[in-house]
Length: 249
Image (cartoon, rainbow, N blue to C red; front, side, top):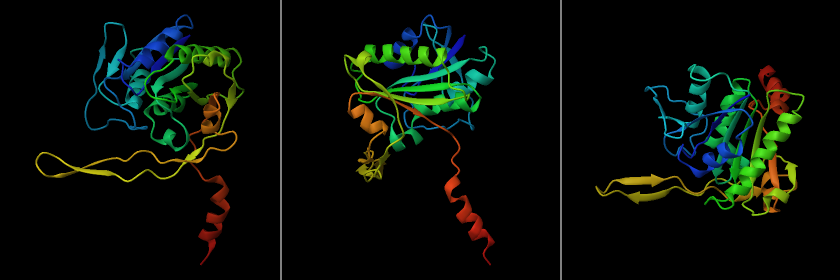
């Protein structure tokens, strides 16, 4: 088995090192990750400048681009065999609810899924890498479990969020749906040294839907959230209404 591992925190991040170490023995591991932190880059590809791939002393390859660039190059450059599984993470912070639309961690896994390869994104819900060792052990168990008994439909795309707990090994796993957030807080205006206005994107909005069965609710209760994702953004329930609208004079 060949396993491709990526992230969005950069190839030097503790999370990807922990995930690679946890997956040793499962197959041949290939690491393609961004050269630097690329959080929030979503599924963007670099199309207007060339990309370079370098190999670090530990064997990790790092790419001068986004998480999606990293996986895309791994799958299309001929540098490695086609992988059987794509893993992303472990991310420094949660990727739940609406955040999944912006997440580079989820995007790296999604890129594998778009190429027909099963993929899993792993995240710790709090920043700071607390109890990363426990999260890595749980990630290994999830990979082993899904490989031993994969779902009937393939490929599949999973988004896993883990609370930073020392006893995470004993935490229950639960299949969840994405929660929702309120709109982001306002942009933060500042002035640069030349007196020109600059802006920082505001913090993410507060949680709006953290009801039963959401990723927010499960991780808050100390469980491991496993959310199956899909790429089809079609509003299927709205199709009849729009067909009716189109037929009106």
